[in-house]
Length: 481
Image (cartoon, rainbow, N blue to C red; front, side, top):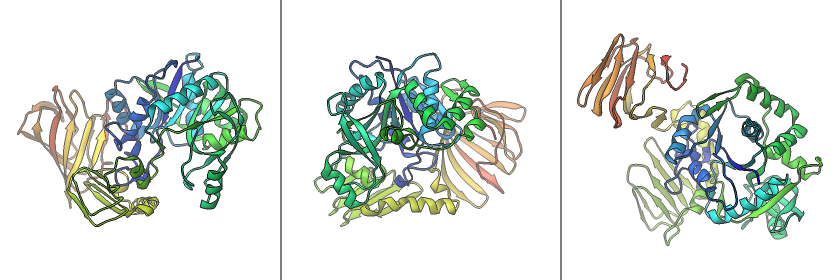
């Protein structure tokens, strides 16, 4: 059997899980269930599949998440490739790039395609069907996994199974159907031949390239050109931005799978394998409530939360005490800069709040108060007219860019560790309980030469304090601006 590469698609924004999930730090990067982020859990659940040769994972994501994802893989002890999309073009182009990358050394591995933001509670059951699917994919089939439904769900697409294929419940795909209304969903549940579309796929890389070439030659051509114009930067694989920008957007289902199910391609066979493993796409707060452990009254409480006379409620706190009295079927989520209070039946409407935040150009729709950077993080502690205060953490050995600001000056106070500061033509050390001043318009750089994290308080003052007031002259992380 060919080696198996886990291909993790990490392009979603998870807007319905706001305020924990933000556009620039989405749900797949968050530890919503357990200590692992959803992305880490996705990579970890394929470890140790009996009889399967597992290769290093490949994560497909955009530039914005690359350093956080690299750090999360590093913390797991995982070495893998991070394939960067210049812009989102849906899942079919993302998989096409992954297949081209997987075959770059002449190999033809099996690709296990997994969204980064799903939950699967029963890992042994998942690994069992992956092992079954790998054998079919190795023989040339395109395999997907249908979630065994337990309710007439209207939020998922469905797959209808046809004739048996290879035993153990596997069947040819008869058709894909869109998200149904409640009555239609009930008929699917009663019929017994329908399953929820999981968005999980398996196939050999060459099989996918042949299928996408037959179904959407324009997508394959654009991706191939973008791949040929790309380059490797350590663990990051970049593709040609202009060429990929010409690629049409389409999903794996629409571009290929529906046409395979309709019999438009002589090969490959489209196969669905039933999966009962505690799966959830965690699409909204009510879905997260369903998969989290609950108390005897059906409540989920995380963080500093007090509940009294509450039922079927999800309450989460990232800092402040959250006290709930006499509430039923509610969602209460506290973060340092936003609080969500919603009825559990209305959690799909959270996206409308995010849309309004975007229209009003409010930062709460995109960023958390704490923002992660490749060198560490900063937390916006306070802000007012012509001033802003940040708590800055710089990882040991990390270096910020050599930069300058047109509109602001900065005062730096070292709380812990030692800072190496470049200011104009001077370079000097600033130790704990010492400070320094960076005048407006002065080239400067901050480094942590020590072996412990550098913690600082930065006070900015000036006429404009936006993050886009940065002119970078040098940057070890390849950022422009």
